[in-house]
Image 1 (tube, each protein chain N blue to C red):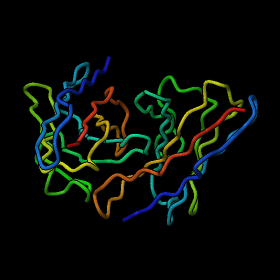
Image 2 (image 1 turned 60 degrees about the vertical axis):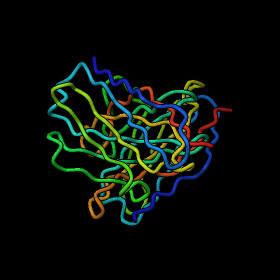
Image 3 (image 1 turned 90 degrees about the vertical axis):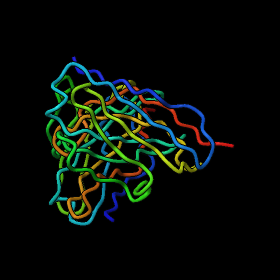
Length: 108
Length: 117
């Protein structure tokens, strides 16, 4: 089955740029979606189809996808961005959704 | 606005069964694909199952195939997850989610299922 690999943790100072990667075999050929989950809350989609933003998501959140790596970029990081972030794809070969292991973003 | 409300969770012994429900409102339920996603305590997200808008097509994660059944009643705007032969490793918060395009644009608040002796 398809595997998505994320770093367990990323740390960034307020106002700086955070980049969270999601690795997978030829992931650039798939649509990647990203979710933010704060403690005790349900996940919220922040980027879909590699780089589109749902309504209400700040422009500070952006995404890219090429080759074997997809990236979620959070510009001008704020304390409120501290959360777990998950990437996700749909594996059409197995007809299953796949999540990455998640990355904990810490704002220093 | 879109609302998804799960119910039916609780504590159950290994080998027993439980059925989760998800009441949907704020959108035309019968025109959307729906999923269940779960999260074990302190762990990441795990996709469980998906059902087509008309209920005719269903797919499952390997970890639940043959034990769990996803279904829907479009007349009641409700999604279900029948969980049989439960194992301790099925302990998790179960989320009902709406499909936007092979992703999940709305999530319920989650329902805790604990499988324990």
